[in-house]
Image (cartoon, rainbow over all chains, first blue to last red; front, side, top):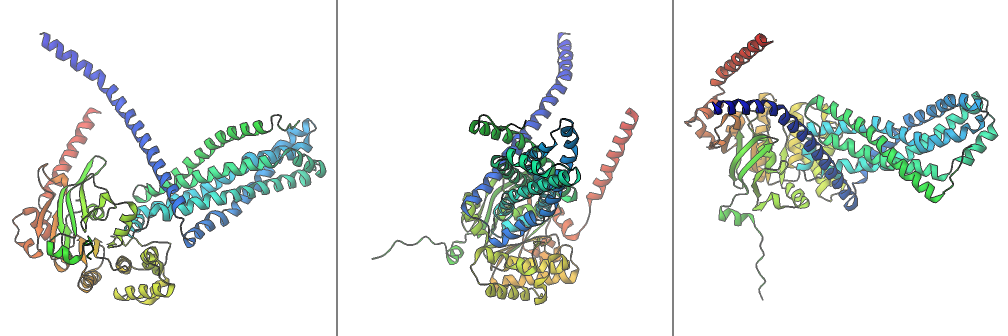
Length: 289
Length: 295
């Protein structure tokens, strides 16, 4: 009798425990997978940096990547910059004109552009245009055994495929950021002065007074990290692509999404860091009003 | 005054010792939770031509990639020329790979490069030659596999499957390796082109005394090119204590073997697989019926 009771009790508790054990098991799996993915990415990045300091790729391997990342991205980044500059002028003009400070528009727009929008937009365009393409290209190479072929011929795939893309991204994202900043500033100036009729002299005077070299530096400095993140994330996704057309598509999408999220996360933390540096160097800061 | 003898392992020494050029010891390969290879032991002598046969998914390609270190075994060792691949540094492994030529199933040519750049790739990686010398070497290799000079400026996508395979062969052999590894070299080709590839493999072997390991399920290739055949069986169809290599012998012994599984593969008979498929379909139908009743 007591045995029967014991068995029933045990089976009841087993029934109750099973979902809990399953839940713990599932979450454990997620945590382990997460840790392994981070570790794998760290190792991948470490190997790429190892090659960077030991042996750089040949010129003929680098140039096509520089062309792809820099030259071919320039028009789209310039166009985006111009329109964002103009849109900012459109959106802020009404608010500023209400308090009679429309001549300060240049300061606000240019500050936003060089510190935030220029680098973030250039990086976003790069992640979309180049990051996705990199992941898809490397993913296809993985699926069609081209990466295995490289390795079988005694070449190091990370050295041959990742390092040139990494260098192209970090060197050229700065140029693209400066281009986005410049075109944004020009676009905002054109719209404010010629369409909205803001006084040209005061617009330029305020722009010069409030936007300094440090602001420009902040944007360009942040863009270096964005470029590095885009290159490493996209190449890593491509290298770890699952077989088939679906796998390649998923790698390209993941490369953009993860890069974009990482750009925003880096932007926040670098923004906080660089602000503290700014206030440490210039405790008073520059006041807009 | 005599100097200490140098410990250089020459080919003649190895032949005298009877030591293999390539040796796999108790090789286990696992992907995730799935075992693909278990307890593989294999010795390949210099100059031998081995065909590894077996049905799709039995681990033939994995075995080939493990030989060259593209896949790391869970445990077990791969020795090439007496050196354990697992103990080599990345640099040493890269150097060692120049002694191998790997012909991939779908050629694995680099899409972004021309045929000339593809075939020249190993030379540019490992030799310091002038552009003229590289071009001459590329043209010589392409001529050996019967391709005209006009293909050098073309991209891989512009060539037929058979031509791509021949370019793959030219690229793999451009550094005159000691061992050629072929992954399904004749799969997907018409019988004539397949025979051309067979002839090229035999020519490479006889002209340069290359050791060949050919993964194939084409019995004509196995019989024609190999002097030893090894059959690998899928682990999912084996008992835990059974060996995965179920046949190891000359091609002529394939027809005399008592093993039903080998005979079935060699003759291309579905055998009990059809009954298994029917049984699986019955089980699936029953499961659907039960689920239907429950819902």
